[in-house]
Image 1 (cartoon, rainbow, N blue to C red):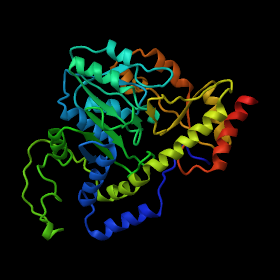
Image 2: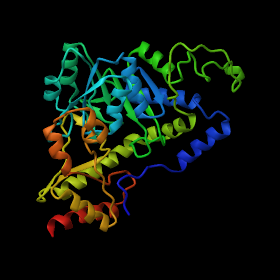
Image 3: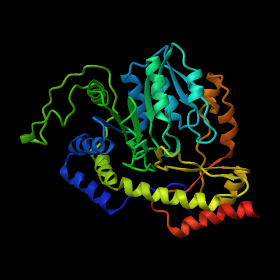
Image 4: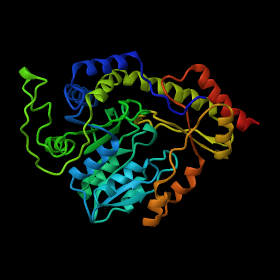
Length: 374
């Protein structure tokens, strides 16, 4: 079976884990600090805060901006549920935004229509690794005095008009989940250029403590640490471990290479499926460099195609069942998103990852072509 996702890890990651285990310091420590340093250098941003998931990142990004009861956050429905959950974690109200049919990204026009005096944050999602058109979004936000928090869970390594995603919005949230372009097994990161936000996030991720364990050790006495600390506010257990960070350091060195391979497969697929009746291939705007986290086709007879591919030992996916149609959200929010509701039933994700062999790529192509050419 060719899976829809497969982590791209190997011996170097194993060795990095071994080194951490042998060091005796497994939690938040020197590897995490180094990963943050290397990541912010790669992105080209002042600060990077490592966390244990993108869900945690989204929660804290909104919290640190003061999002709370009575506030509204504009967010697409075609996303993983964590994007919406994070709004509710902070007691705010999600305002669901429709998508552009061509890119499947948040519709800036719909977002602009739905801004009210209660709007605190616009939370776009870089769906499939393709960045949203940030300039007009940031201009709207500046004019209205609201923040942009970017959900870049799919977009590690992507670029917008020559700048790395993570260096543009007020805060950007990344995912290092097992199947992401850069994986730490589980993990996340927030990037920002605001020093005060960086300082507060580092307390919030470590249960509100003003100095984490590694920071309060004396370099000459490590790994012996000082016990004194103060709890300055209610925080969370959201920090990254050094085991995860060690994997991330290896992955970061390989990220551009892995993303180039994703782009190669994207081009092969687009060429192979171009002109097939019943299929629309994804696009990449000329002002972005997508991370190609997933390859999403718009197809006719989607569910029949899924069954056909499974019969041929190919495991596709669907990204996503719209959040506002899930039971929890459906009973709590009355929402109509005509484009989202129509288009999601035609979406299918097929395997795209660096370890995909030429033979596997051809099997995927033939599996899809045989269905529509029959």
